[in-house]
Length: 255
Length: 255
Image (cartoon, rainbow over all chains, first blue to last red; front, side, top):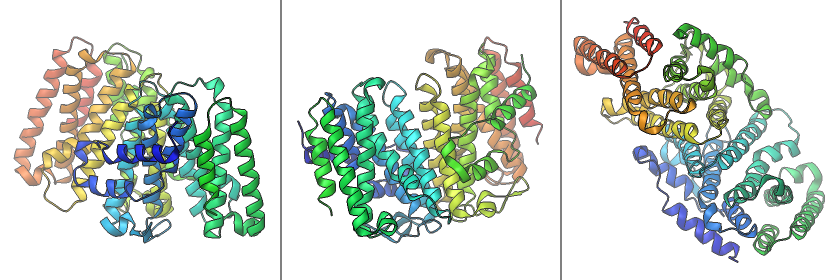
């Protein structure tokens, strides 16, 4: 069984050598810049760890895992734009629109999303690409709620904006190693808890979102409850899920 | 055999009743606004007419045809943005960002692209979605060349920016009625000519692009040559291609 760190190295290596559509030309630079931003690769690692725990070869999940990371990168590039969150920096570097200009950032985001589908379509069947489309629709809808200026239901927003892509990470891991749909539910329930835990930890680190809604203690209690639920879901699955447990460890170690 | 107008009515009806992902919520309004802009639906009609000429039921091509129209709409919404072409009006109405603001226009474009893939993935196999991804990558790369500020090769730019989606319209029409890959080449050659003819006519109407490069007479001569080639390609195909011929008639009647 490979550890999360070993799976992360696998993802990093694969992304570094990823061949993009050759016609992208000069657009390849902002696309790679966005993709190589030093993120934790938590979604693709979750995807590979799920494939491994389900008894498959994690390498079979690499195109799907990369597709998910590309969708995540697309969303960051567009969310950072002046018209949306207007962020100048991300992970200590200028955001894509600051570095390459707004036009190229918009097009690079579009290209990341399209390349993500091309990756998901390397599989012989449609399940992984469908999972990706469903997650991406939800993510965009969540971002819409976030910038809409109204007072959205925070839980509904999180479920869409971050939750969907975490659930798809688990779902794509399962599809990539052929887990039939009627055996997926317990894994997906774990993915849903994992996504919610990620959000709670993120809000605790940034002092916003759930912390503003529930206070620090309330947010902490909810995170602890979600962690317990996630671990319980793993125990209920008859499989070697240690790498998934370690991913939960990594999440909670952040706060 | 249905005429282009009958096929157009079929597309319009289908698009008007198209169910989008329910979670899009308030984002559905700009998405539909972009989609219902009164375009000529030339790409989806080309897709249906191809499916029909290849001996299939054009209705089988409806989700693919709609997917192509959504990709086209996505590209218009993003290309019109202030950072790109900064267009205020399209077909006599305010552009999406003027009407709904830049943030919502960016997200609506993202949603149109994602919904397009969801439509292409309604088919049981991956060919149509792959065709769409290939076309969309090329289109984005073409738009990059167009805004890059350099002096791009106009022919290469057109082949990507407009050509790819016309070729995909033909390709998706063929896949949707099960034409095997080794019988597709003559149809695709027609699609390529058709796309180039569309561009030449468009440039003659707008007095730019090829007209600037070759002069009006040069552009006219090239359009006539391309029209002859497109018609010759149809004659070489052993099928009832009258609706495709009528689509060529419609194109050339514009100038």
